[in-house]
Length: 310
Image (tube, rainbow, N blue to C red; front, side):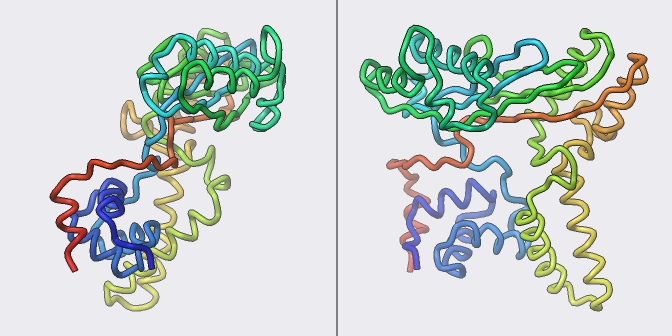
């Protein structure tokens, strides 16, 4: 059983939005398993939903680069936000983004590390040199490329720290014969939606099976506690899972700009207006540090007091 520390209680509170005492109880009930505690809180109705993006704990930058009908997003981490503002580090992120697109590494971060870096050596070797000169650990984390045969790939950076780089980077790949300016305008709107809504897949069939099953288990536990007949419970579970699928697949999400139109219908309407069908082929959404935990040493006294209770 994991120790129920102040840090664990604090993290569960941030992940779930539940109260501290409820978080402490959830961790005790689940033997200190953070993910199980999140599910326990949700099953008990004490947390509306787990945060989708995880904790944004690591620093660094997400860089995006588009050339023609191809685009790439990369995430490069550092220990502190100070380094993200360093011109040398920004130049590195910019160069690596271009290398990733030109070398065709797809989603292979090892291939990116081994790719030739402008001016000599490899990306990995340049990274090592940066660590030595900047004096802080840095790491290549992930990369993804999207492309279309005809159409446009549109990039968007939310709260950009410098051109083409910031803490959230989005790419939208639109397949179409429509005019480029029409696709760029649509792509920008879709990218802003993606940055805000954080879809987990393009469509419902692409949602990770383990996440869907996890929702089913949570829904079944909540429904069982309702005391309703088995047939009603079964319908409640299926309804909850269907809702989860719709809310987390991009094409079935409601457009954040009006709150009522499905993204699939937004794309269809744009194609009709442009006089040529538009297909939302793919997308990328990288948020800096999502899923990476960073140790914190200054926990609030209130949290510590709750965590240290028997």
